[in-house]
Image (tube, rainbow, N blue to C red; front, side):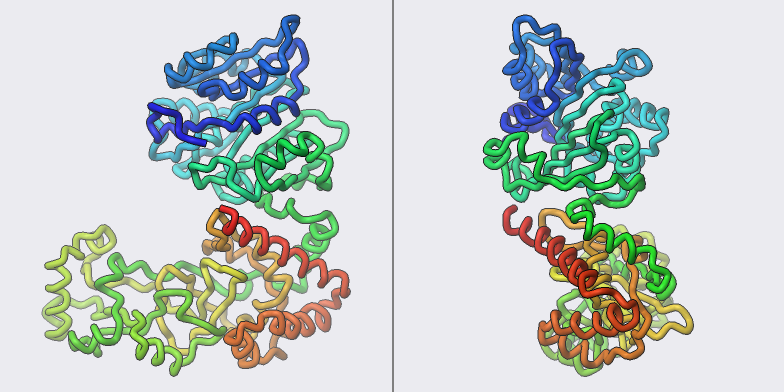
Amino acid sequence: MKPIDGYDKLRGGYYTPAEISDFIIQWVNPSLKSSILEPSCGDGSFLAAIKKYDSPDSNCNVIGIELDPVEAEKARKYGYMITEGDYFSYYKQNIEEKRKFDVIVGNPPFIRYQNFNEEYRTVAFELMKKHGFHPNRLTNIWLPFLLLSCEALSENGRIGIVIPAELFQVDYAAEAREYLSLHFEKLTIVTFKKLVFHDIQQEVVLLLGEKKAFKKGISVVELEGLDELVQVGLSALDRAEMKKLDHSADKWVKYYLTNEELEVLRKLNVDERISDAQELFEVNVGLVSGENDFFISDWNNVLERRLEEDISPIISRSEQVKGVILFEDEYLQLRENGKRVSIFTPGDRPLEELSESARTYITWGESKGYNQNYKCRIRKRWYHVPVSWKGDAFLIRQANLYPKMILNSIGALVTDTLHKVRFHEGVDGNAVVSAFLNTYTLALSETVGRSYGGGVLTFEPGEMRKMRIPMRGAEQLDIRKIDRLQREGKYEEILSYTDQVLLYDNLNLTEREVILLHSIWNKMRDRRLMRKQNN
């Protein structure tokens, strides 16, 4: 899969593999009199597939739209009507409130907001707003392509479209997920363990939507790659279990689970005995210094510049915290080992009130131009990093095997590589940190967080606020024991310990329910880690 020769890369144009085009056209199975729209036809990959199944007697009305004149000319060789121009302008003039299509297929471009031609973006966003959508500066061009195409489908129409796997989890597609669940009676999503567009690190899915269907719901089919797509063909769609469509904006990664697994999650997600994260703590991003090379130092640099009185302890990387408690001696060992765990904090004071060594250091920083960095430049005093509040604990922002919470027993600051946590009044922080590591919370985390090709599970503060922790009996847990097991890498022993207290003894879950929770966590975790290897 290579960028089309002569394309401006910002147009997001990439050849669609013939294996995908052929599969989608086989699935939509256009009738002899179908009206078919390809809104971003490029050089005609989908048109070539249609041609294979077309016949001389066919009365199919096929329209392809392409912005690039060179690619549009290539597409014309298949004998269909190709309109050269912007899809959104064409839509506004020729489709909106004028006509519907039986079949829509394609592979819309992937272009972020800032690279989206303003003229076309304005038209696209106007149309989206007209149909009740709320585009913003995170909106990628594939989204209006998808949503407006769905609006252009006839009453019994079908859509087969290649879109980024971002649909499953990004916030800017939340509205689209809810819309699709309401707009189609049946959705089938084909995903791949391996990248199918080899020259881009963008994971894609095939979205197959039916406005009307005998069997209603959503299913997810996961294949190894294009070879398996060709080998099994449409029979692959019969493998997946049909699930009930959840008419909400929730992430769709949950549809990788079985109905039995989904049911136990649904049950626990509304169980009033389990605490929502927001009932227990406040979470926010760590500090952003504006220039870590200046503000965050190892101890040798502190000593050389005589800054001992002008620094504070900080955790700057998640790997610096091994257990679930940050101890004083552990921090001192990090310092001794040359880790950058000291932050320059001279205070929000005028330069003349600072120590001589602090003033000298600030002058050196200005000679390097650090004071001109954006975050530094907009501050009243560029050398003062504002801190809204110190965290009682930290939360891993990017997790490998699983997320964890770390008790901040030394009052250290933290960079935005982790999140900071402040427990609400009356909440036992030790109990929350201990209870966080249980199989239900870890299973839930895989559906709340987001994961891309790198395999890590990433959480923004808003996603962490959606976490739930079973707190009944949490005061019985020994945080020192959990910390020791965590440092020894014995996470299975941690879960055996916490599950017994929290899930069995206090929530009275059955063995089957806990086994299902383990299955959910293992399946979702292993899937994202395997994607990292495959990609």
